[in-house]
Amino acid sequence: MVDELSIETERPLALGHAAPDSLRQWLADLASLRQLAQALYGDVAWLSFKKGETLHAHKFILYARAPGAFLHRYIEDAPRAPKPVHVHQGSDVRDLESVNFDELAEDERIDVGILEAALDWFYTAEREAEAFAVLLAGFKDGGNDATSVKVALAGWRRLQRDLMYCWRSQLYADATIVVESTTFVLGWMYGGSLQSIDRRFDLDTACSIWRCAAFLAADSLQQEVEEQLVAMMSSTRAARILAFARAADVRSEELAAKAMAYLVERFDSSWTASSHVGELSYADQSALVQRVGDRVTAGNLVATSIRLAACRRALPHHSTPWVEHVRAMLEGVEDFLVAVLKADLAHVVRTTAFLHLIDGVGFNNDVLEWLLSLVIRGLDEEGAPRAYQVLLTDVLYREGGILANARLLVLDALDGVTSYIKRRACNRGRGVAEKTV
Image (cartoon, rainbow, N blue to C red; front, side, top):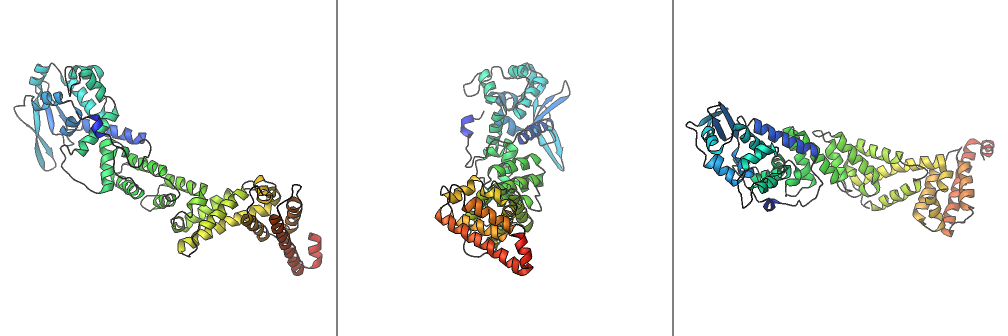
């Protein structure tokens, strides 16, 4: 039996627990391998001529899982069948290592049912406790008694470690594959989880694994990879994950939705963290702008403006296609700010965040000046007088007063509103303008 401590590994990137669906599928596949051992390249068999039964198994699983005493007694030193078993697989004919179970049963006082219970345990870590105890009674492996053996074998975690050892040690291996993503897929097949692989797991590898899983129709592996991608989500990775989810050969709506939600929630840090947001499709860029804009309210407008201003400052000064695309996206969000300011300016200027902009607690000259310019930008003939009144009474002449720098900016904004009204008066006639005022 393999020393459990000798095969413990730590992944360089911790990605959480293995997906339960993936593990359940793994155990189901192992159970199927056990039941179909004859057809699936089993290479050892126990023949009972009295009952006309034959049990098939795979040496690589037995040598990875079974105690040494079991291997000696039931395979290596067991009486051989008088005639080998021939197996036809395609155009190939193979001779299996064949054990005379009738002679073995007389010596060991066991029956086929007990041996089947042991094989079930070796393949799936599921067993009939009483039958298994009878079979292993008296076995010793590395100094442990039967109870210790049963404890050491308990649970699928030990099964996972044993099979990973089987893979790493190349026990009865007959093929070599060196592509990194395929190595992860093979490790998942042996260990039931991507967590059992000690190689570097990065975004490119994850995407390659997903495509391998799609080719193999391994749905549970695809699901686990998507969970790993969500766990890996960051400001620099989110846009790449979204682009991957939108790829023609992927089209994962669930993964795309989670990446989109991340980019919306953290737009101030993720849109400029790398070039990838600016390289998304026009449809995805438009969707991001729309979803960020839909979240803007009078209550959070100032906070959104501060984040938007920080995003603008983080943009590189040189002009490249992706920079221009992100800049256009920020301008699109601005349009939503303008709409909220136009519809509910009175509410905006009474929020705590706006008061902090003008009373010194959180004064930000650039953001205040920019917000006031957006007020001017959203003026229309009906709303201009209301905007003037709000800026005058609720901001400039507010009871608590405002900083001198803020006062100058508000006065400039009032001049801008007045200029707008005058221009409208010239265009529409004095009588119309006076009535509006």
